[in-house]
Amino acid sequence: MTATPATAEPAAERPLVRTRPTAALLRAAVVGCAAITLAVLAGKPVLILAGLPLLAWALVAVARRVRRGEELGIPLPWIHAGRRTIEEGASTSVTVTSAPDTLLAATVPLAPHADFAPRYGAAAGDASVRLRLSAQRWGRVHVGPVHVLVTDPLGAFRAQEQLPPLDVRVVPSSTVLDAPIEVPTPIGVSGVHLSRRRGDGTALSEVRAFRPGDRLHRINWRVSQRTGELHTNATFTEQDTEVLIVTDTISDVAPAPWADDDAPTSLDMTIRATSAVARHYLTAGDRVSVFDIGHLIGPVRAGTGPRQLRVLTDALARASRDDQQTRPMRRLRGVRPGTLTVVCSPLLHPEVITLIGEMVAHGADVIVVDTLPPSIGDVSVLQGKPLRRDGRISDRFWPEAWATRRLLRRTTVRELREAGVPVTAWEGPSSLAPVLQSLSVARSAPRMRRS
Image (cartoon, rainbow, N blue to C red):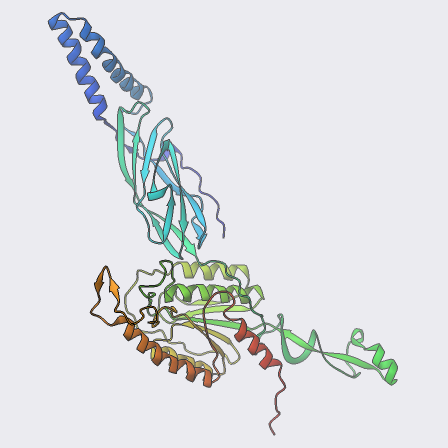
């Protein structure tokens, strides 16, 4: 995702920041005046040679300041980003600019899940410094507050100021699912999904006898010549569908302590799976909506096309992982029969299981994407040894507790699968391929007609 780079603000429109003399200027003035005074009083002209260069340097610095009209101060430095919206793993430039013919040093506090170049977020330059920000996880990255130090080229006057933070929005990476786009029950008007309803389309349904009202360009001349009667090609119509993505952001489960440093949390996996599924079906021309039961993202109304993708990714990026306030679960009022519903959840709350059952009862085609980190509940890495953190043995049996919780959750997953709800773990772009392929095969399989 790209954005137009911000242009520099004119220096005349920026407020002034007052400069103060540096210790070097004060020392030069004091030492120069003292040397000349001692030379006059003691009658030693050699002292003038020691104090005159320092005094001349101080006078030149003051004269330069007066000539440039900087008695009241210099324009306040300004910070801007090359792109205010980037994807996970992408980079953007953060530039701090001051008045011309000045020396600038900027220091930016390190942000979580973000890297700066130069390292540690500190750089110096001539009137402008540029930092490279690389974001590793979705969300908002607060760049700042930025501490800047501005001096003139002679180092005689300087100003210190703290600039307000700059927000950079990081959207989930544009992962493309390696899966088919077929859906079990198309319920739209027109699209790319093959339906069971006869009508105008490209997929052949049958060759039947010609009837009044059939289009002439659909006549099958080979069969007609062989049988001696007019026959026409009947086709299946093509429809779109409505995809509802239900996200579970009630809690954010962190990976186990022995997992990698960049291991995703349950919220990371939920957001990335939501973004990938939405992009997959929006590319096919379907209508996609998002319903968040944890109040962290907010509902996104159904839409289609590139604009809907931008709206959805912006909504995902606005979610704040720092919001730990517990809120009641948002209830889904209803779902249209035949809607393809993808539930992205770690399956830890009974209310989520109840919601899945209600959607199945309403006739929706439900797929569950398991977003619990795989390291949670895995005690095989301990090899019978107690968990140590910071060199100390933990007196809390968290690994054993999570192992027990995963066993209980395994029962829930088995019951969902027995009820006809496929459950697959999120492991990247190919996670949903087996499930969607099986749904496609089941849809094309012959069905028994009930009398």
